[in-house]
Amino acid sequence: RDMAEAAISNVATRPEDVGIDGGKLEQLFKRVERDVAEGLLPSAQVAIARHGRLAGFRTFGRAVQGGQEQTATNETLYMIYSATKGIVGAAVWTLFEDGLLRLDEKVSEIIPEFGTNDKERITVEQTMLHIGGFPMAPFRAEDWDDRERRLQRFSQWRLNWEPGSQFQYHATAAHWVMAEIIERRTGKDFREYVRERMIRPAGVTDLYVGLPEEMNSRVAEVVYVTPPIAPEGGFGEVTPDAVLNFNKPEIRKIGVPGGGAAATAAGIALFYQPLVNGGLAGDGTRVMQQETIEMATTPRTTDIHVDPLLRYPVNRALAVVVAGDDEHREQRGFSIDASPRAFGHRGAGGQIAWGDPETGFSIGYCTNGFRSVEDIYNRNREISKLATDCLI
Image 1 (cartoon, rainbow, N blue to C red):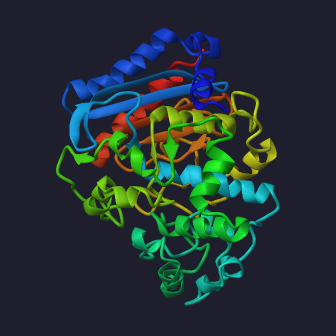
Image 2: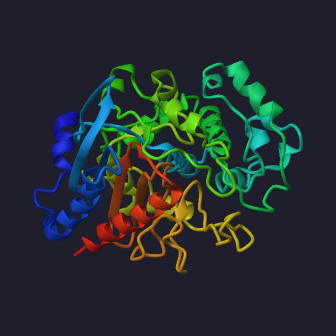
Image 3: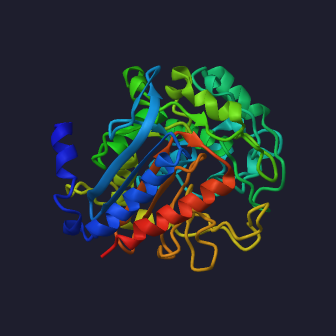
């Protein structure tokens, strides 16, 4: 299929054609532009989609791209950090659908090298919910492409606590395991599988798990606009060095499954479209069965699985967060007006990536400017609210 034609076919002629208010959309754009105009962010990009088509997409500001500062455009790609988790996670959902994986399987039955140091009891489900008990397991991105080093890492990892007993965010470790599961069960490189089984059928062009060399000149370099201050509880793995590592082409090309994708906001919004429209892409291509999506986006954590700092229930489904029907949906990264079934996964620096099956709506937001956690939280809350305000 011709990609240029695909790009045009999934853009609405008018926002109203897909139930988006054009005037409210302009207010969303103004809010995103404001941070750039006020010097709070170097550049930012936002897109919303509904009923299979892109309703609006705009980029503001300037960014270093390919070593030179230039205007950021709708062609500019951003590193989306943990928003990658929902993308790789959705590829794992297809393994359940195709009968290649079960939730109750032990990871060690799939990856024998993982079954050491009390980790042999951890299940696929626990891994995908961040309750497996190996949150800080170290893994250098460069080790991925060296199979021996990779498997050595899995064997060295130790269990931090009883699997299932608590929630602690696994910034990268759990998704390295998911990537290996994809490879063991499909025989394909996980990056290739995500592209062929999810990204391409969804009709998405600008979304890369593992960036091709020639795309580096399109990526906005990440900068700290305010000095990095450790959040309460510390940086964990998401240190300033780890964040800035993604300015290196050799790290971008690895496609770190827990945080290394590059995308445009439109790429994100369109990726979520089939997932919030019963599994169908805008052109009618079936990406996944609706039952698979419902199974995968049903919250599975319980009241004991709370955010370690803020103590609210995390409401996690398989590799994604679900908005929920309580007062914590904004803390989980959603609009206050999202339905309880909305799901997605935000990324460090304030990347937004979620969709809502009740309304067939999705949003992508990207920036290359890192600010304080508080700034990010307030900005994302406002942008997500303005985005859902656009729904007619």
